[in-house]
Length: 258
Image (cartoon, rainbow, N blue to C red; front, side, top):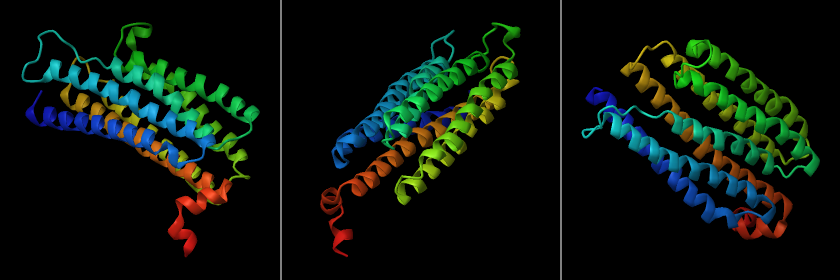
């Protein structure tokens, strides 16, 4: 790998580790700044970034063993670390989105039994194509990408249509943030198929495709997990203030005094 490509990914992996690690610390320390009923959503957000931080350490090690100054001969970069990370964190991202709204238990259950399996299926179907596994259809990446898109579109339908029906009783500030969350998911999750397609037609190792894929995945991960988690925390704060006047008074003293 060229110096430029190696240096770019080295720095992006480092940024990914720092972002995930310190977002995790912040979310767990700050969970007391929301009412108890919303702390679970904040802790799930922190769990997402903690899982991602661990896997970014593993990806960083795999990257250095494959392309670093002391690369081990015969070692191949393990894209599986990303997919294990996504298999765990993508369903949890959807769990925290539903949990922070504090919907009726029946409504939450109805949402989650549709979203979580769809998220797991989306990740599971994308892995064979991205890892270029020669299983079924000669490892045709385009087929796996297409199959993975089906549950992705279903998730978007549930988030934009079904979840939208549950927002009418939410505070105006929460509705605005949920709409921003959905757009953030759409924008960041849209990067993954673009990065997937960038490496889809590569045979063997192609540096340009590899760098584009890993850079795209890493930037999208930071936005979809760290920024998303901080937005979940913001929603929890807004809902806490709307639910409890004493909380609002203690947490927003300057705003209330004005």
